[in-house]
Image 1 (cartoon, rainbow, N blue to C red):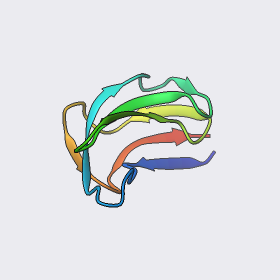
Image 2: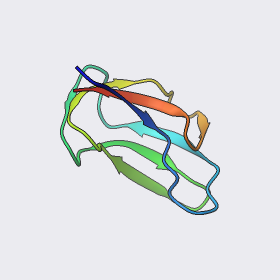
Image 3: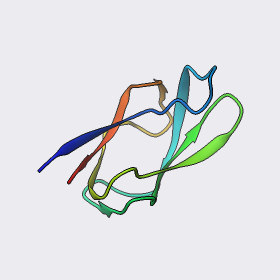
Length: 78
């Protein structure tokens, strides 16, 4: 079993932080590659972020909180 930490992605060159707006899946849910898993609000837009892996998803970050690029916000166990 591999545990993969999902970190807040850098979506633009100048991006330093983002706000987690919504989880589309709940902890304990099986996710597939490319499935939208959360909404991330940046300074300029809100985007849906897709799962980069398949496995069991666990939320770490809290909706409404602002995180720095690279902060862990979820994990997937394969």
